[in-house]
Length: 275
Ligand SMILES: Nc1ncnc2c1ncn2[C@@H]1O[C@H](COP(=O)(O)OP(=O)(O)O)[C@@H](O)[C@H]1O
Ligand SMILES: Cc1cn([C@H]2C[C@H](O)[C@@H](COP(=O)(O)O)O2)c(=O)[nH]c1=O
Image (spheres, protein in one colour):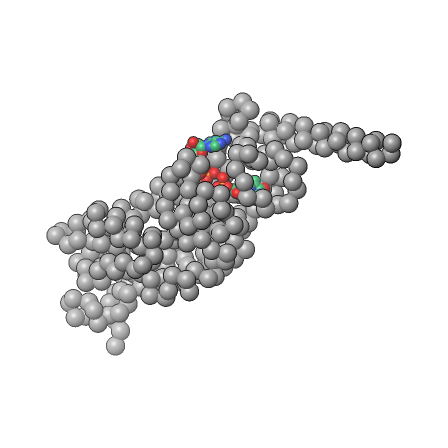
């Protein structure tokens, strides 16, 4: 019969030690994770903690004291938003590295729509990067990584989250049901300052960090992204060639300049057309 004893992986390492054998798989991130875990083990009273596996803790027969224990993992959702160039990816990388340093099993996902700097890495505008799973839909993650590896995961980072239609469902299940810590980074607003998907998960989040960039026109804190070009589709993957971070004042004046320029160009077209 299964007796249940709830405990935290951080407070009772001796019970967990048997489950903490790190098994690298053949994904590039796993080797990075494995490397870092081995390089940075955390010692608890003589035990080496090499990345825990909360899901396996329910396999009670493997407990060293011969008794049945069941670990109930507690999930969490952290959200990082802001305009472009605010440091969202940098913050996500820093948190993921810190989780890994603490011995937790991590994986990073990004939208495969983001092909700007690399296909299978998340890359900051400064060039810092980590390998990731590029996906078109989050629902495919479990199958891609494999069920066994998924169960071993404790932390899942998601970058360019605004591009995932199934963000809400994935995060809810991963945190509530599967006990994962999910760290989500993405745009809260598009170039017209309309909600851009990531806001859907605020009601189920534990923490929300809104970052600011620096206004490219005056250097003040910037909360918005101005599209410099005339394209009107909502999704347009690009960098500093198309977008710039701006403060409230320069967002408003920038939009006015763009609209005026568009009107002038349209009037000219009509004029030329009628000649
Ligand atoms: N206009 C800009 N063009 C290119 N890089 C920029 C610009 N403004 C800031 N950066 C750099 O981008 C870094 C943030 O990159 P990143 O974390 O990828 O941002 P985000 O994910 O929010 O777009 C900043 O620390 C800064 O060095
Ligand atoms: C404002 C805005 C942005 N995008 C795209 C442009 C980039 O490819 C990403 C954001 O990247 P970052 O990591 O935050 O720098 O989103 C878009 O498609 N539509 C928009 O309105």
